[in-house]
Length: 186
Image 1 (tube, rainbow, N blue to C red):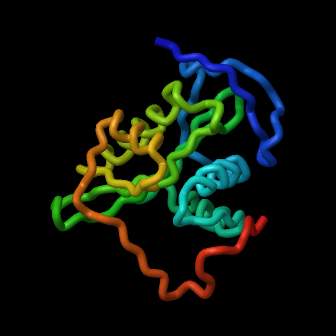
Image 2 (cartoon, rainbow, N blue to C red):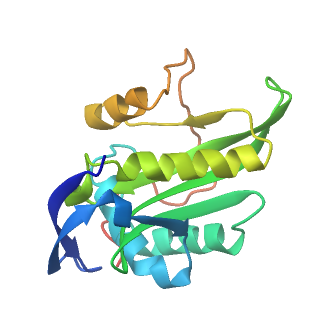
């Protein structure tokens, strides 16, 4: 079944530049490359606007994406969803070794699809791509963190077979000079 919805494609500055009909049969999921940088930064700005624990900082997000892309392949991967030459979504993953599983696992990060492209299967396509990438590397489990207040994301993950755990996410940033805050850093 082909899903369709009307969408506007934003450029990196968020300005609508084209109007089209999204046909999931025309969505290409592929490895990201450096030419996708500004589109991915724009997607991360959208994602971080709804995540309470993170602030958007374009400079930091470009640096993080560059590190991910530089090591893309064996241990980390960034995928983008593209329609008509425009990036409309992204997802990344990094491999870890789990002593609990006695095998490799992966942390999924930064799954985000443009607002106007949500609800038609693009996020599921990105997740399936990442799952296949992990499986090919011998991974046996995927895990992720989701913002507690992002009910739509939690419902999406549950629909795609993700389960709650009894674990909680903790973090410590002893080497960071600056705490939460800071604006867009563009």
